[in-house]
Length: 226
Image 1 (cartoon, helix red, strand yellow):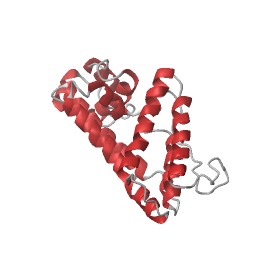
Image 2 (cartoon, helix red, strand yellow):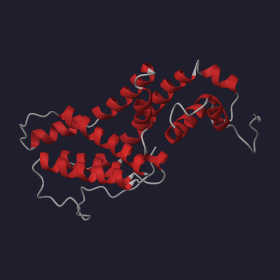
Image 3 (cartoon, one colour):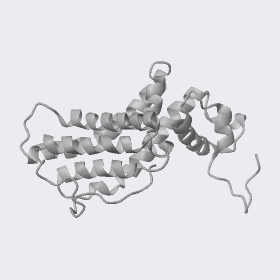
Image 4 (cartoon, rainbow, N blue to C red):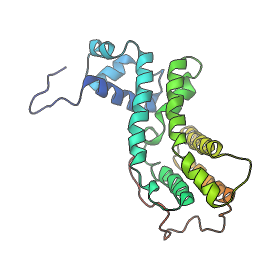
């Protein structure tokens, strides 16, 4: 590995580069198909550097799930779907935002921890649990708005904010699987269209125009996925 110079500066520390490489390659190839050699080559580090930071490939799997949770938490916290004053509008803006970032190649918008959880849930429980913490941690960020929308609209049905937040993630993860199976991002976006209609139905808001591009509460920003 060449040393950093004024003309070729170091691209962050080796551990971060390995985590970024793992994030990108695992989303494209899967965990099992991603080798330590792949990671070292992409991160421009030696095998010795890899094993200095991670005791094993499985340890790297846990670390990259935690890295994903950390970086995506900041990404979603700064996203514009939090802007509407109305809680239900924020929930619908979240769905619109998730749909808007389904762009580009499959590896660019699919979920790292969802991909790994499906693949290693039985063979690598430490990685599975780290993926679960990431997925359910993000899910929990939606619960307050859902509960507020329930209260504001007098919803007394026997479903909870927690269960709807989990269902929203199930639709997202399922949409990613369909997009992979059909090699078509449209399949994931289609799932989110149905999710929006379902949420409007739950909150007795079906009279609202779900496709009104002039509605200020609807999200119109498109951005790159983390």
